Length: 459
Image 1 (cartoon, rainbow, N blue to C red):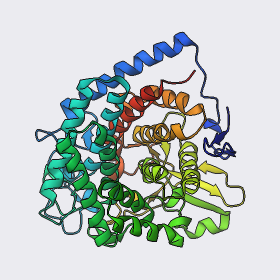
Image 2 (image 1 turned 90 degrees about the vertical axis):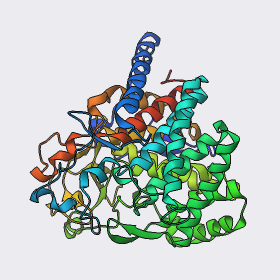
Image 3 (image 1 turned 45 degrees about the horizontal axis):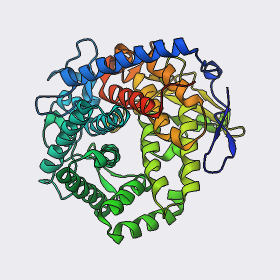
């Protein structure tokens, strides 16, 4: 294995995941031509099967994709599914009157729309297939539908469509995936759609800038880390030409805490700052790897590499670290480890191997569960999508074969939110292993069509 990632910009090889778990430190096998052809055909068939699942199961009657189904039935979680004392921790402050099932079915719909729209754009670029353009247009229409109804809350608002309806909840990650996808769709869009993309991009960026990057999240006030919003500002400047966005970009970029942020701090869920007392005694840092974290971090950086006013070398190195961390967290079955331990002295990362604590947190749901669980196929698929979106920036050949390996292992029943191979989830959390993830199927399709667009799955 070439265990270094080489930047096309600098040509300098840098170590890649030297602390990767031993079970993952293996050659992604190069394949014979006939073997590759067979694999490629299997993946092509699977891609169209997954698109059928999206059309028949995931997208609701209003054209809005759900983000979760019950894996066993491939149906949405029904009202009352989470009733009972063991699920009281799921109640959201201010939304106690709303059934949680309806909220959960659509919790990540913005991200799923972004993944699916980006996937269909990649499919169209790879094949010229008009069906891909039509599917992209339908997803764009759903994005527009949610944006328009969200303007009743505030100008530039983009809501989480809980239960398929308007809510006053929003999160920066949903907006991130939407903005990235709108930028992907713009060259395919009609003139009318292009004007709408300009309007939405400027509106969403303005909303967050006006709010000082702060809004309520699950009933609590949350100030999101500012590094995420650099892409919001860069794209708003690209599509509006208004210097207020460029000036705000430069202002944020100059802040010490923004430039110092690492992939571990690139999303809210990676708690590199959280250091329980026991960490100090063993000299290792605990890093949480939520499934979307690597893809979200990559999407926050990639468009900045095209901005002539941004520090390209700085962001390229940050992107390398993001992909590095994602590769470290990848398990042999294409799930991802929920927690890693990082040795402060050597930088070596290994999976957490013990249950540290469990205290259900009413604000963050399951985040009080510090244990060696796995993020399911959602984690592997989102890593593959991140790697494929970054692949054109690096000269490494492992990304193509690693993507092939991941996508082959993730058949429909593996597209889960969480996995519990060791049976350590307490009873009140076990439902999380029976979730078919919209993010997983959306990211799988995105990674697949990006791979095809780039020429396939390795030589």
